[in-house]
Length: 511
Image (cartoon, rainbow, N blue to C red; front, side, top):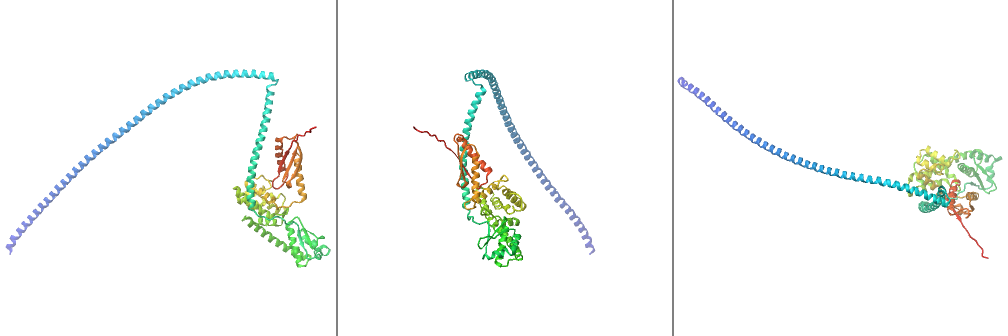
């Protein structure tokens, strides 16, 4: 067994050494092959890179050649354009030189012509002076005298022609304006339906019997004195059967007295304490009625959002009348007319309607405040938040302030329409006669007037002039002057037609 180990160990060692040497040789061959493969791969990559480099260089050269060719083409085009512009500029310079030479020749020609004209002008001046001297010698007139005669004739002709032309234009414009105004007013009035005014301004309280008059008077007149003292009215007890008349300038106080007296008559107990109690109740009742009347009028007029103090003042107009026309109804009617006119004319209907409704606001308090009702009403409206446009319409509706807006003019027109429409107001005979007489006096104040007549209830005045003093053109101017003076001096509703008549009669007798 030991001998076998002796032989086995060397053999194993030899085998081990041989395996190691073989493994190392194999490993060396593997690495050699790897290195050879890597070298071949590197050589292949290097060759590919060189080939790619050559391709890029070739492309770069081709691109450089293309860009150079393109740049040379652009440069050539620009050079051609510059040469073309140079030729054009040279051509223009040549044209300018030729024009300059032409202008110089024309300037020399004009200079010569001016010299010739100066000579001709001098000759004409001399000839004119000679002709003038000859004419003055023949006509025995100086130049100034002849000029004055000629200018006078021309002035007369021009004035006549201007007067005729102005008259023709006035007639034409008046016809167009009248037709347009007639259409607008007719449209507005046709849309308005109002009752004829017939209310009375005097309060009459009916009595159940004449015996009640004595009870109203009371012992030694104490009842009637108490009633008059508390209400501020005059209680008129006369021979009128079964009636008592109440009179005062304040319509609200008159209404309070009427309500209180009616309650006393119904109750039957009439003595100072009872009168005081009934007057107090009547005041509260009338205040409620005034407030309700103002609110109702605001709704009817279509003017919402008014201040309570304005509504209260408007409600007082329920008891105020002007020539028989109720002022609260007049305010509502004016608001409707103003709104419709504003719609027709393209103005602000809201402003016109508010101004028409509030234009007589000052009449509710004009007995308590000094000033005209237009200015008083405007100040009250301004104080309670009305817009400046509405305030201006109120203060200008009687033209105490010059109307500056179309809404202000519409308010004036609507007020006149409401007050002058048929059946709107009643006029006393005395006032009517006084107005007609004043109208005729205005016309008689002009020279050349022979006779004048106010006709058509004062809507027209016809003036007959002296034909030897007034010619046709003067008659036209006289009509205009008279109408202007009527506008400036008289107050009237609507418009007044002025007709001037000039008649020339030639009379001869055959014998």
